[in-house]
Image (cartoon, rainbow, N blue to C red; front, side, top):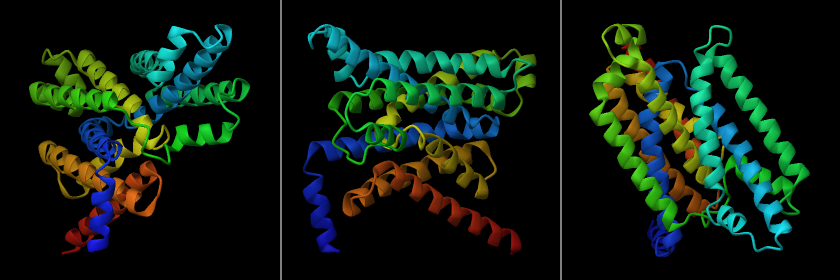
Length: 300
């Protein structure tokens, strides 16, 4: 036990390890709050769809950055800016726009919500993969794709700016849920009644979609685009096994998500496993425990 503590103390002496822990906990907290609403509205796969869009946007950003650097002989200011910010200037607007389009398209009577998600996510994933293969940023194309989809195997990629960005986002998400808690509750359970009561349901749905897009873009660095939806879905489903009220599910989901993120990051440090996969594995284990507990409780 003392050996494990000494190893953790050694690693946490480095700023990049502390950055990974802080970002992981903040992303987990934000994802869990939004996850409850998305799962109850039966629109949980919006996270999966937007994560694929973010992957396609990242491919566009990478190709644009490489092209600008080649055309200018490596002196392109915008290309350097894209590289320094991990393409956020392109990834974030495209993902936010897709969140809005996905919400509008999902409300179309001709294209239902699940079909809209599948259409946008598969198209963006295919386009992104094609661009990365046609315009590779490095000789290891397979490694770049795997790192983007499943998260970096290293936790050295986070910067202090990304930590502050996640902290600001966490404050915004918490403020939105506290200030508009009653409106979000009404929109989540009965949107038609909420509209009849004078609540601007479309506006609150748009806020939820935009915040989801922001979290997905930030979470790509830690867990990868294919694993982001797990952070949204699993904590909410685990909490719903044992709790029934909206407030209890949100609180339990937040606790589960933060604990799993913390445990996952620590285990990944000790065992040298991929951060994203380890966090999701912890979420799956907790879901199994909660499901078993719920089954035993019902029998008794």
